[in-house]
Image (cartoon, rainbow, N blue to C red):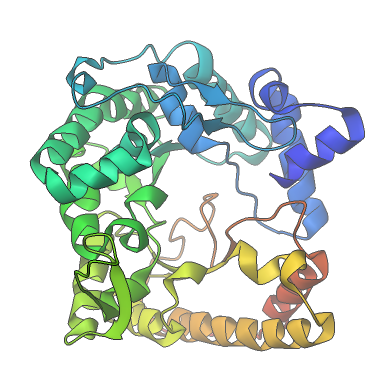
Length: 376
């Protein structure tokens, strides 16, 4: 997002051209911006939600200086025709653009490519519409699960087949913000979103090279549902629920089932970092912590000095937790650290509205950390 805004301001390059016309410009500009921000590790991405549904025929919006997105007013499918959706051609248009970006990224970095696409639930939300899909989640869950299985079998699994044929050493990172506990509840997240991922990966030889790490809103496991006339059916209210910790553990188990490589705590999870630290140590896994865009948004800052002090303290807590994990867990020497996935501290989103002094502040706190001592 930040690179697009910069290229638009400096050269008048607009969204469609930015993504679709020159993979070398796209890759080099993004790598350069990462370096200018002070990042030691790159992460190549694109408008993955829009790019997953556009090859199916979904109308996509390309604003001048903002990322592409599915047009919510012109959805591609409905309950009457979703079963007619077939497998697209992955050698042309958007899939070819993504392939080119991955190949070009590999040239200067040498890192195995990572395909980034939606999961079945988020894809369904983009081409069916968020609200109609949510209504069916409540009233017709069997049809929703059938739709998700069809999207996995007819679209996403064939796309991954195509990818791994070209890049046998590659990885696929799935994203499923729409299927998160925050939006559809923890039980539906497990029984629909996560279940559909496991379904489409069944019998796939590359299943251990596919992961989803962006489910958000873990805190909803600690609230309970109440049906009231003044609220939509199944609305979540912020009241303590019996067994909240056990529900959170159950959700964590489900999330690990589709990402056994690392555990991530996102800003919108709102659960204390100590829970994730405990879980990764118990499971012998790495810990990643996301810095959310609201945490570095310049428009929400009233007192920059106070915000910088608060951000520094929070970052020190994250770094201390990660350091304890690194010194406790027993992992292979490499542990995929050369891959371009989110590292231990991960900026979820940096854009033109970010406060870059806070970004610098966070990076400085990270670099102050003493080297960890690996357990023998």
